[in-house]
Length: 137
Length: 431
Image 1: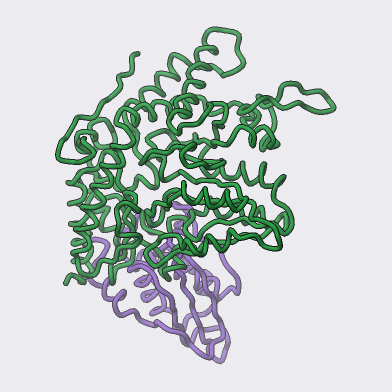
Image 2: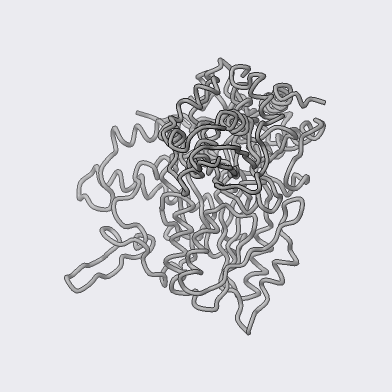
């Protein structure tokens, strides 16, 4: 169990980075995890070029995995171009989490990725294939 | 191959009179340790139950030695298969005290049974301006079919409120049963036992109230038929739905029971082979009930497997199953209540609560609870339990749910409370 709930995961869960709601914001999106009903929203401010992220925040309640994943993901977004985010491989996020995530928890780990993609693309995206092992309820 | 009927060993100290840990020997699933090398503590019967060996063997035997299509062949093997299939229907009828096995329709599961009623009875008996009443306590299977029906015919769906401790608000039900513009509600669709909270509804009393008001009554017995006596005549209901896979039987088989006169009047739901007497190019004549509602080749071996599961449960006795689970519930509720940071949902009174415990741990999300439990060998359900309106009622995203059955015992209660401790330790919320 210590494998999954390592200290850094629990630290991100207890004191998540970038948590809250940016106002004003340029992009906003919310989505949910059908297996548990957890909801997550993301607000994004763009820089003057309108092509790069200046600031980002996520909000919502969820399990340690989904909250830590959102905290870790949003830490890396400032300065990134929207095109780079659209091209982002969900595996990068799973690698960064660095803990073994079973099939039943993949949607928890990838909810933040899905919300981010929805925000930069302006509409809901499908679950990445990595998360398709478990269907909704 | 002869299939032996397993009889659980007696144990005096539990009021139900049998030992859950001895019963475990009848279930092959318990032979294999979990991925972390622990004894499997299976506390998710409310989602689906493991199968005793006798059910697995009966099905293998049916496929190996007694298999042919039913109701068709003029040869011995088909007659044999038909006799076993119809034998299962008789066992089911006796299990729910149906006046006749002709009132028992085999379907896939309780969801399909409720859909059958919503499509067949609903589309012919519920019209514009009518009302259907269900409750906030229901599984989605007893909500969505009625939402669809009401949206299609212009009827209104109303939900009886639930109290803070997860019981139906009787006053609200009585108010909703009142006629409106001189019209009584058409139907009360209600769970016998809530899958999300474990609440036992007094269905006999509620059916009486609904009938007095002029409404028919559908009982969703998916969570009760496996765990306590279910008697359609004592309930006085008009329809009853159940699933085989939750009561030690295979998946893919369930049943709708309905009053004969209702079934006679209802149009078919699915059409095709088996459900007709005669087909011409101009039309068709329906077969008699229940076959009118069983289009196509049914789940033959699954029905036979369900019959074996019913034999197994009947050998224990449903009163004893209920006593056994009530005892485990009381012990678990008492132990978990002692742990700071644990919030238990549903009625505290074991008379009104089935062997299901829905809980919240302060500071730990139910998904994380279930993952840590899994590591401890304890299988529970975490989520909204297909009852999102219940979660909305208490403003929670999800709960962790443990549910007991015949193979559980006090060692499982102990494993549950110790897993709660493990979850609190990992998250540093022990007090």
